Each structure stands twice: as C-alpha cells, then as structure tokens.
Amino acid sequence: MIRVEDVRKRFPGAAAPTLDGVSFTLETGRLAAILGPSGSGKSTLLRCIVGLERPDSGTIHLGGQAGLVFQSFELFPHLTTLDNCVLAQRLVAKRSRADAEARARQLLEALGLTHRLDAYPDMLSGGQRQRVAIARALAMEPAVLLYDEPTSALDPSLRREVVETLRRVGSLGMTQLVVTHDVALARASEVVLVLDHGHLVEQGPPQQVLDAPRHDATRRLLAQAHD
Image: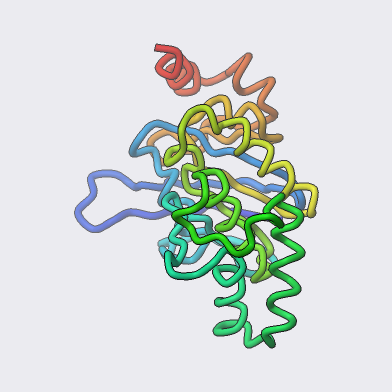
C-alpha cells in the first residue's frame, strides 16, 4: 500500500511549491499512473516516495522499502541478465549466491526472460532490458515498485509490451506507481492520478478520469496529448 498524506515540497528560490498538499491512497497490488504536464510535480513526488527527496511536511507510508525502475534502466553492461539481478542481492541483502540466483531465476522466468539469462544488455531489446531492470528491483523484495517514464526510452511499437510487463508484475501482487506522459499507458492502469502545479486535481479509474474528466487541467492535458 502507498499512503501519501498532505505532502508539501518547495525548493529553495522557487516562486511556488512543487508539491502543495498532495494526498492519496493506493491499495496493495494496484497499478496507478500519475499524469501531469512538465513541472507539475510528478517526478518530485516519485523521488519523495522512493526517498531520494525529503518532503518539507506531510507523511508517506509504504509498509516497507520502495524499488525504482529508472528511465534509462541503468543495467551493468559487463554483467549478464542473471548477474545483473544477483549483484544487489549479494552486496546489499547479503544473500548467498545460491539464494540470490534462485530468486533471480524465478523472477526472470515470471517476466519471460528465461531464454536470455546469459545475454549482456547490449544483446537485449529495449523491452527486454526494461524487464531485467524490473526483475532486479523485484529481487530486493520492495513493498512498492515505482517507474519513471517507462515508455520514454522505448520505441512506440513496444508500448504494448510495457503494458504486458506491468500486468505480469501485478500478477505477482506488487503495488505499482508509474509516472508517465503516456495517456495510453495510463489507460491500461487501474487508477489515474492527475497533478497540476503541485496539486492532485483528479483521481479515479481511467474510464472516469480519461473519458469524462472533471477538472479543466485534466481536459487541457488530454487535449495536448491528442494534438
């Protein structure tokens, strides 16, 4: 579960808060997308949830640690798929090689990468590299998995593969929060949150938020997406 309560953040010298009283709850096992124009506070909210930024006030409850899948994946180029998913388990979680490898193999199988265990990142497609990055994050057993613009580094033709990957992760019971500009990706989520100038202006199922938006900011965002 993610519970965000009245989170506020203003950077030094800024004319206005980047986050101004953001509150929402995301139930365990749900997939949510955060939409908003550039500068709306999406990335700052993500960084506050994962712990890379400290809010000025408010509280964030996760029930454990958060894992982050970076926009550029950040895989080690000299390590195979399997070893990319084993390294942090060995160094940070202090698991044995056998335990770490067993966990990595299980996750890579669930994400359809059993046939690519010995491949290096430059031998993988963009979608495959993303799945390796997700498996690596899941191997550390986070309470929540966060994604920063998961489709921006991929060819548009791979959008469907991204959606399928998120659904596979959801089938493992993982709570997922996606920051995105991609309305099609948001439509595949279960909950859509819309940020505008640091305020959470709208939230609900995609059928309501995207097909019958109630706030002018949401309508403007959708109009721009269709331009």
